[in-house]
Length: 465
Ligand code: ADP
Image 1 (cartoon, rainbow, N blue to C red):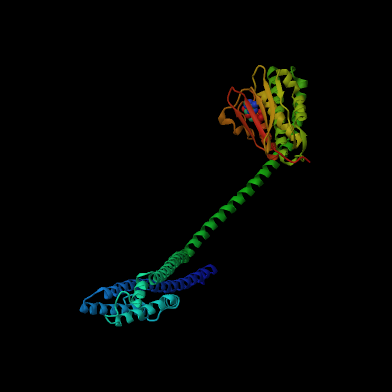
Image 2 (image 1 turned 90 degrees about the vertical axis):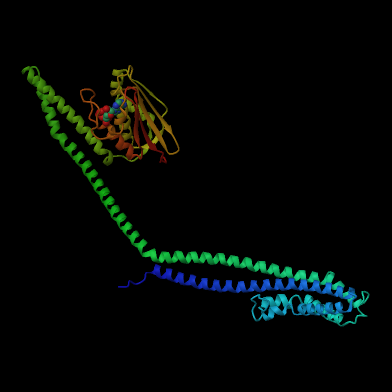
């Protein structure tokens, strides 16, 4: 069944027809141009021939005067008359189409204008000259002497300047016209070639159009379905993220109550019965209390993690120097106990949720002290600004991190040590990452085992309210 043509195909067909018509016109134009250049060439040819004939008549006229023998004179006179006749009819060839020049039976307007109308001066001179030479041919031998004034005027005209110069002008004129016409034709042929190429492309386009369209449609469909899958996945991910956050929040929040109860009763148990039962019971009670404490820390951290997205405050100008001072006060006991040397460069005021930013500094400085066997442990805090953001860094001289772990430590519950080696829940850096990302920044670490670590995080520059 024939399918109806689409708009594009119709347009292509129309363009092809238009181009074909333009091609036909251009062809006709070129043909007529070629005819014109032929005629111009013929004109050049005839003018040149006239020059030759003219020269010959002058020579013959001279010979006629200078030849003493009577019979030889008769021959020269006859040759002179023949040459004159040729000269007189030299341009009728253009009209009659002879001389093998492939000329039109009627001269075109250009040829007429160039050859018959414009050089009227030449024409008149030629005719005049012809009449003179005819007269010369009729002269008696007695009259044919070099001091005959008519003869000398003929000789002067033919061998002198007037006629050859006029012929030269006409020939040049034709030559220039001819060259211009050839250049025009070449340009036209260039256009013609371009049009043919366009036509070919269009035809190929018409043939390939449906194929390409089908291919494009297939590709588009594939892309569309891929995109749909992607959107679906993104939605699922967002949903599961929210679910997870919700779950973490509910679980940690709801677990707190029963856990508080377990904690207070185990503590009560420890207080009342520690040392009153046997050694095993004492040990069990100690384990129970430790377990409950660990679980409480875990749940608190989990709760803090789940609250980063939901309980965040609006960003406000936050003086980081004051904020770090506050954090150091919180960590004062540990810092003093371990003899930690903390140094700090000048820090900026940034737009941030100050509670969350304090948590980031607290976790990073806390880790820098915790994972550190240095004597003394050193921590240095600094900040550097570029065009777009502030980059904060917390440097320590601690145990360092192997390169293969520098990514995963920012995940939830990711720890590189047991809790007997270093206490912790593996949530601190995950919280930092979540907070920094909420502020539009990035966090990463540069470290090597035994060489200390430097944690970096960025905060984009924001207009301060
Ligand atoms: P936690 O401190 O509770 O173990 P974090 O999420 O804060 O959990 O840290 C994850 C892990 O990254 C740590 O267990 C530790 O192995 C490594 N880590 C973090 N900070 C440092 C540090 N400054 N130097 C060496 N290791 C570190």
